[in-house]
Image 1 (cartoon, helix red, strand yellow):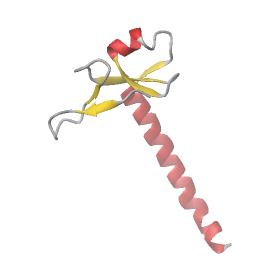
Image 2 (tube, rainbow, N blue to C red; image 1 turned 180 degrees about the vertical axis):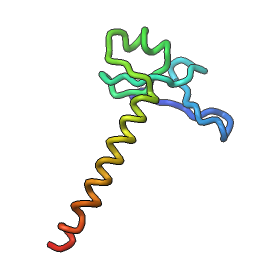
Image 3 (tube, rainbow, N blue to C red; image 1 turned 120 degrees about the vertical axis):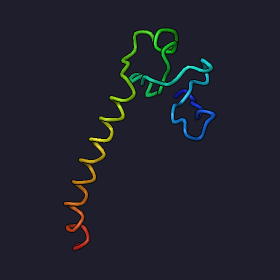
Image 4 (spheres, rainbow, N blue to C red; image 1 turned 90 degrees about the horizontal axis):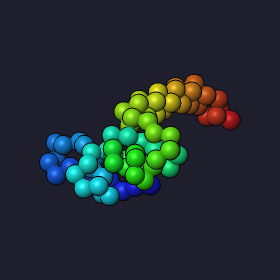
Length: 81
């Protein structure tokens, strides 16, 4: 997985690529399970399965919510055991 750095400004929530200085992380390589910048997509991850990081985040949030709801539903059964 490629390392990322947090923006200089505390209010700046963009992440930057350490390989390509100053490039914002906007993509996610599904093949490598790594957040990547635009130059990474065609240099180091050419031919890999690439998604926009916001779509990956949204998908993760949906799965996380669904899992949480499921745990809440089954938890009383485990407490009774």
